[in-house]
Image (cartoon, rainbow, N blue to C red; front, side, top):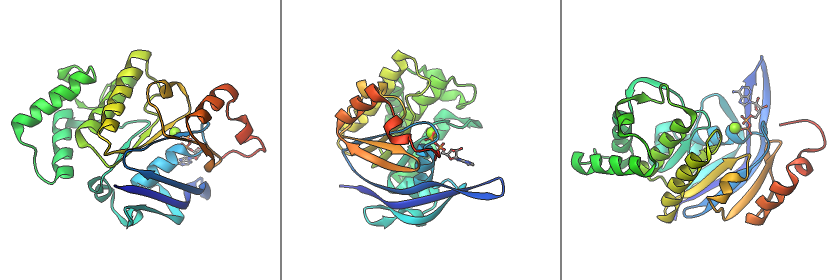
Length: 254
Ligand SMILES: Nc1ncnc2c1ncn2[C@@H]1O[C@H](COP(=O)(O)OP(=O)(O)O)[C@@H](O)[C@H]1O
Ligand SMILES: [Mg+2]
């Protein structure tokens, strides 16, 4: 069973010639098979947490540890992290002009699996995954995210998730900007991956609505750069009713 352990993580970013601390001691353990929802207001540092785990160069880890099965994730390059089984669905997926979706997916799968998937089974695998996400097959020949709508970008993130089958999946606001049908289809994709029992999911969101479709085992409230409360699904109901105010009052953001 793979386990991601985050201990007392502090992260800063350089902004306007000064250093700003954004993460202020994050502690979290995610095991394969578990779904954790991280919920918190805008600007609380949720994406910073996702990027820091994934290895974005903009974020400096000033102290703390992140390990996957005891291995130091922070020492790994971004592609080593991916090969170790980490996956990030970005809040704002980037466009990659000149690289087709089909090429991108096959190259990623080859890197992650350690060998090129057999062409015949691969084509079927991609086709069925795209069908389940209600993606037009024509997307395979388009450039990655170029001109995609918000909903199409998010479907494409989940397509990658389904094909790459990571050990730990971090989904950053995969629900934002989706209409109700897209939200359901994307959630069903996440649930299919979860049903394998092999992936631990960190579902980052600031709305509770995705939790109608994806049932978390644990809910964490994230405010001002750290986890300030943890509980079961009932905590999401409390947030829905009462909002984040209780956790954010007392001034200064992030
Ligand atoms: N690359 C960056 N440069 C400057 N400030 C940043 C950067 N990334 C994040 N921040 C700041 O850190 C805080 C947390 O941002 P973020 O992690 O995106 O929050 P959330 O995802 O919870 O909305 C915000 O105040 C944001 O402006
Ligand atoms: Mg964010």
